Image 1 (tube, rainbow, N blue to C red):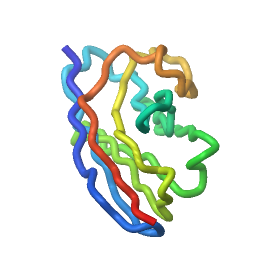
Image 2 (cartoon, rainbow, N blue to C red):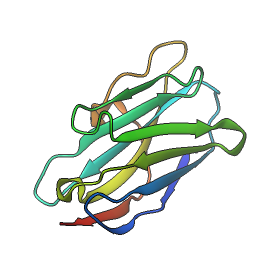
Image 3 (spheres, rainbow, N blue to C red):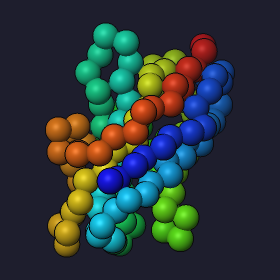
Image 4 (cartoon, one colour):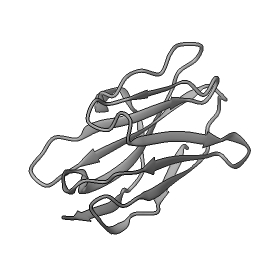
Length: 127
């Protein structure tokens, strides 16, 4: 059973930085996509970034492109989300999600494409 555990959330002032971690375990294949999503109160869950475990290729949502960086350390089965230049509108619960990819690409930021989810970590940015 795939398990995803997020950590690293917290409160920060606008313009600051945070790094989120997603510890993954239980995969039965080495080929999977791990994505970060976020959901603010009253809003739909939004895809932020995704990384391909096989080749490290990344893809970002328009709202965070250039400010957030997703990366992985395969030996640790951990995926990170470095968030810089944070804005008040980045305030949300952040979730790590995963799906098996085979040899396919990892470009989807659609929540319904992902089968496994963590419990989330809260990020609050004050202006």
